[in-house]
Amino acid sequence: MKNYTITVNGKSYEVSVEEKGGASTPAVQASAAPVVKPAAPVASGSEGRVKVAAPMSGKILGIKVSVNQAVKKGEVVAILEAMKMENDIVAPEDGTVAGINVNVGDSVETNQTLVTLN
Image (cartoon, rainbow, N blue to C red; front, side, top):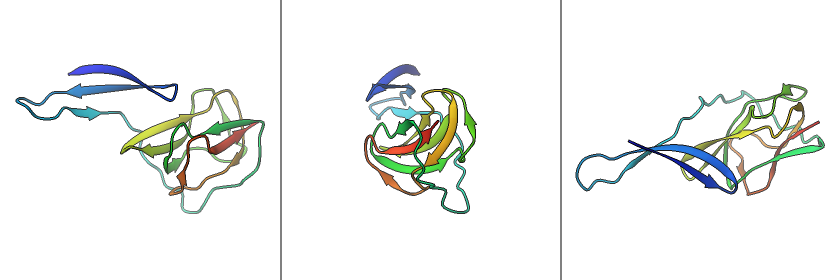
Protein backbone atom coordinates (compact mmCIF):
# COMPACT_ATOMS: atom_id res chain seq x y z
CA MET A 1 0.00 0.00 0.00
CA LYS A 2 1.29 3.43 -0.93
CA ASN A 3 0.23 6.69 0.72
CA TYR A 4 -0.05 9.92 -1.25
CA THR A 5 -0.98 13.52 -0.52
CA ILE A 6 -3.05 15.01 -3.35
CA THR A 7 -3.85 18.73 -3.56
CA VAL A 8 -7.03 19.85 -5.35
CA ASN A 9 -7.91 23.55 -5.53
CA GLY A 10 -5.49 24.30 -2.70
CA LYS A 11 -6.89 21.64 -0.32
CA SER A 12 -4.78 18.58 0.54
CA TYR A 13 -6.18 15.06 0.75
CA GLU A 14 -4.47 11.97 2.15
CA VAL A 15 -5.10 8.82 0.07
CA SER A 16 -3.87 5.24 0.24
CA VAL A 17 -3.48 3.16 -2.92
CA GLU A 18 -3.41 -0.60 -2.70
CA GLU A 19 -2.24 -2.59 -5.69
CA LYS A 20 -4.14 -5.82 -6.29
CA GLY A 21 -1.86 -8.45 -7.91
CA GLY A 22 -1.36 -8.63 -11.67
CA ALA A 23 -2.43 -5.87 -14.05
CA SER A 24 -5.51 -4.79 -12.13
CA THR A 25 -6.35 -1.17 -11.47
CA PRO A 26 -5.25 0.24 -8.08
CA ALA A 27 -8.06 0.90 -5.60
CA VAL A 28 -8.15 4.34 -3.98
CA GLN A 29 -9.35 4.48 -0.40
CA ALA A 30 -10.21 7.60 1.60
CA SER A 31 -11.51 7.91 5.10
CA ALA A 32 -15.04 9.28 5.32
CA ALA A 33 -17.19 10.48 8.20
CA PRO A 34 -20.62 8.89 8.64
CA VAL A 35 -23.38 10.73 6.83
CA VAL A 36 -26.17 12.10 8.99
CA LYS A 37 -29.23 13.30 7.09
CA PRO A 38 -31.48 15.81 8.85
CA ALA A 39 -35.22 15.17 8.89
CA ALA A 40 -36.01 18.60 7.42
CA PRO A 41 -34.23 21.19 5.27
CA VAL A 42 -31.76 23.25 7.25
CA ALA A 43 -30.90 26.21 5.02
CA SER A 44 -31.38 29.51 6.79
CA GLY A 45 -29.88 31.90 4.22
CA SER A 46 -28.55 34.32 6.87
CA GLU A 47 -25.29 36.08 6.11
CA GLY A 48 -22.19 36.04 8.30
CA ARG A 49 -18.87 37.81 7.77
CA VAL A 50 -16.90 34.59 6.95
CA LYS A 51 -18.06 32.55 3.99
CA VAL A 52 -17.33 28.81 3.81
CA ALA A 53 -17.43 27.97 0.09
CA ALA A 54 -17.44 24.73 -1.89
CA PRO A 55 -13.91 24.00 -3.18
CA MET A 56 -15.41 22.14 -6.16
CA SER A 57 -18.80 21.34 -7.63
CA GLY A 58 -20.67 18.39 -6.17
CA LYS A 59 -23.62 17.29 -4.03
CA ILE A 60 -24.20 18.05 -0.34
CA LEU A 61 -24.37 14.76 1.59
CA GLY A 62 -24.57 16.20 5.08
CA ILE A 63 -24.69 19.36 7.15
CA LYS A 64 -22.80 18.89 10.43
CA VAL A 65 -23.68 22.20 12.13
CA SER A 66 -26.73 24.26 13.03
CA VAL A 67 -27.34 28.01 13.19
CA ASN A 68 -25.87 29.67 16.32
CA GLN A 69 -23.57 26.67 16.94
CA ALA A 70 -20.00 27.55 17.96
CA VAL A 71 -17.35 25.95 15.74
CA LYS A 72 -13.57 25.70 15.95
CA LYS A 73 -11.11 26.14 13.08
CA GLY A 74 -10.91 22.84 11.16
CA GLU A 75 -14.24 21.50 12.45
CA VAL A 76 -16.35 19.80 9.75
CA VAL A 77 -19.36 21.90 8.78
CA ALA A 78 -20.56 19.93 5.72
CA ILE A 79 -19.87 16.83 3.64
CA LEU A 80 -19.56 17.35 -0.13
CA GLU A 81 -19.57 14.46 -2.60
CA ALA A 82 -17.45 15.18 -5.66
CA MET A 83 -16.03 12.69 -8.15
CA LYS A 84 -17.49 9.80 -6.08
CA MET A 85 -15.51 10.86 -2.99
CA GLU A 86 -16.77 12.40 0.24
CA ASN A 87 -14.98 15.63 1.14
CA ASP A 88 -15.08 17.26 4.56
CA ILE A 89 -15.72 21.00 4.31
CA VAL A 90 -14.23 22.64 7.40
CA ALA A 91 -14.49 25.96 9.21
CA PRO A 92 -11.59 28.24 8.20
CA GLU A 93 -11.55 29.88 11.67
CA ASP A 94 -13.28 29.81 15.05
CA GLY A 95 -16.74 31.36 15.06
CA THR A 96 -20.48 30.92 15.36
CA VAL A 97 -22.63 29.62 12.50
CA ALA A 98 -24.64 32.59 11.19
CA GLY A 99 -26.34 30.88 8.28
CA ILE A 100 -26.60 27.66 6.31
CA ASN A 101 -27.14 28.32 2.61
CA VAL A 102 -27.65 24.75 1.33
CA ASN A 103 -29.70 21.65 2.10
CA VAL A 104 -28.76 17.99 2.04
CA GLY A 105 -29.12 16.78 -1.55
CA ASP A 106 -28.40 20.17 -3.15
CA SER A 107 -26.00 20.34 -6.09
CA VAL A 108 -23.45 23.11 -5.65
CA GLU A 109 -20.92 24.84 -7.86
CA THR A 110 -17.28 25.73 -7.14
CA ASN A 111 -17.02 28.74 -4.78
CA GLN A 112 -20.73 28.63 -3.87
CA THR A 113 -21.26 29.69 -0.24
CA LEU A 114 -22.35 26.74 1.89
CA VAL A 115 -22.19 28.18 5.41
CA THR A 116 -21.42 31.60 6.88
CA LEU A 117 -19.78 32.32 10.24
CA ASN A 118 -19.49 35.31 12.54
